[in-house]
Image (cartoon, rainbow, N blue to C red):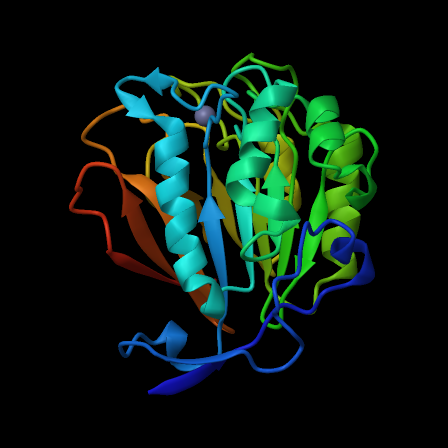
Length: 304
Ligand SMILES: [Zn+2]
């Protein structure tokens, strides 16, 4: 089956955020073959999802035997090879190693935006190992967010609107928080864009009682907004460095694998290719690092 991939509709506000627009135009950009997955039968928009890159200014730095720069280089090479079918990439926070230092972001820019150009339009979320001021200064992203207090944005796709949140509360401290101002912005933005499915991305995981790792401290307040708005279909997050998927109140919760900074050797590392359709999403895990049986596997999730 042949299908066409359309690039995202790019509103003016989000255009300013892009480092580069590497040749994707408003025209149909690619024709490709896919196996016969239900969700991918209609036209889809494809987005590369990365998380927890933990890049240090020191490109030789190892953590738990993993060179984070090597992992991101491999993942970004794969994204570059797939760029013809991708419309954007979203890095889900913990972009920097531990403290969000300027040198870390400089290294990220060298890897992802060589010579000032990225393979695809690039969006960043902030995690607990990022520093908002340093991020905004080094990656020149200050103008993009409708909130001064947090780095948030909306990516408008043909099939859905993608809301990118900022759960960074305190640099190099594990818990995350969205806060009242951001939650109010989110509720209003979701209500203003209720005509299409809504996809949410945030660095921290929704916190549950008994969780070993601290997540979003105001999870209840977040879900009070998401659950009754039936156009909210799926929430992506990183932070726990564990690839996985579950459902809560009909909303898919997808925990992205780390690109680098692997907590447990048996868990996969890599990036996820999301094909957004009208009725659901198809996720493919592209692995980097040691072979893992999850690498290359697809996950098909239907909208509630
Ligand atoms: Zn992390």
